Image (cartoon, rainbow, N blue to C red; front, side, top):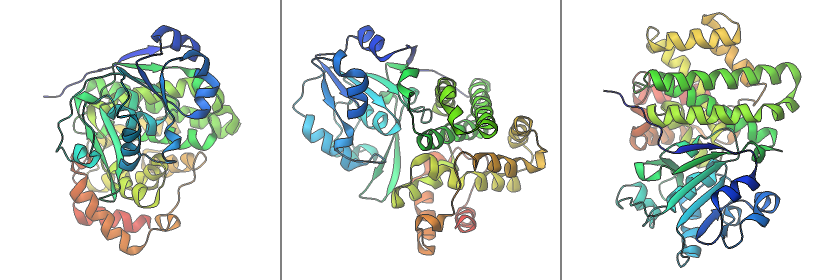
Length: 371
């Protein structure tokens, strides 16, 4: 049996001002937003709301320490609704504050605390990558155990996911690159997942088409053109989020998490560091199957032979974000063994969605080839 659902209501609104008016943001709301975004779009429209500027707690990827710090500061605040405006970091963190009990955070992620939802939740993405607004997943770096882990429970679904293209104005190219490559990988991993079905495939393929055709346009016209494509790419990110929210991600994400946690590599960049090698390994291990359909679809977009699809895909992606070797991030040979152990012991949720099974030796070989 395979299932498909879209849990949050998805709302498209043109401007932040209209969003604030429509949702009546104010007293009783806990609003997660960066200082810059607050000053630019929300300051004059959210009187009475309690503001959480997540950048006061950490820069970079979300951690359990970040969540504990925010929890300590707002535990006496009375609020009925959580509204989060931001990228994947802020959305993943804010989801947790719609739960009744979240501390100790590590216990929540290790399922020692039962997740109980007692607040409304509205999520507004400001990048074109994570798809977090439509998933029931929150990813954190758990510093105590030196890896990233995901909490995936129905209680983390938003009530509303609100898409506001205006909020992507001025998105830096690097942020665009890392987030949109993340969305592309969401679409591809969900397509080859054993949990994929006709509905998830439709969303996966549409996301791939939008993102790769945007990359081709950027390649031919230059980086600045990405700014006029952000509205479409925001939709592509949400499409990919719907797909992987149902079908799951797999080895690419599982193998990127130790790199991201140990060396603070942004999530999309860490994913790209391992992406094509994982899929070339799938191709070698099980060339006949769903990957044939994927390769034909990608080859048609890239105008290349199926046999050279991953070489051509990486050539295009490198024009958006240069792929680096693991050693370039500071990864040591000793790390490769630790990364492999972490993947095999801590990332079972993701590895269960692999196109074909990876054993410990396969994971280690991939890391070593990328090192």
